[in-house]
Length: 220
Image 1 (tube, helix red, strand yellow):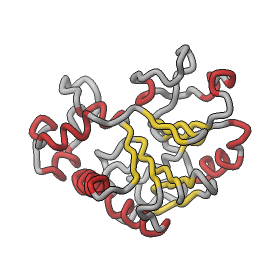
Image 2 (cartoon, helix red, strand yellow):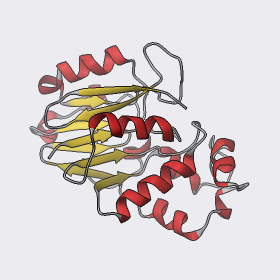
Image 3 (tube, rainbow, N blue to C red):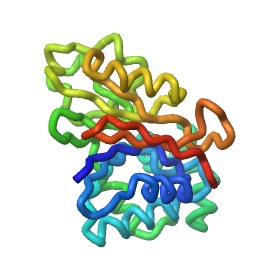
Image 4 (tube, helix red, strand yellow):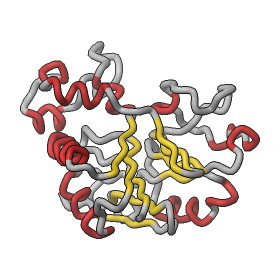
């Protein structure tokens, strides 16, 4: 059995499908998706339908909420992508999130804020170390930025944080992986929707067992 993490799919269905084929993902494996399934990439509905189907078929998959899923429920137009962006609307054939069928609303509403697996904490954006309990459910798990210098290693212990949210280059992700035992954090968002970028524009998969990284270029 292998354990994987893939974050920030952003509607890139074909790229996700190719990546799962490349790593040979099957029912004996476990996979974590720490958020941002939708917006930007053009195939949000296909991504959600595919993941829901895997879930229904009994695959060992675990989903966390990202800030883009969080923004769906904000209909005030205060935040960018409030209620979903145009690419998501077009994918679902709707004009706004409120028009989504209930099964999708329920799926988005039930997303966890984080998951743990062994010593790994899998969360979309990161953790707020000003909290007494760093795993207390809060919006910072979906939105926080620039938190590496605030890590309290006494609170973290021997655990390792795997997250998305902020786009990193391939070189930066590889360097983080190479220093994982020292720093205990790894960002795996390579900006998949940015097709054609040399150091970005890939969907990144991290193998929690072997610590191998897989980068699938955008093929949308």
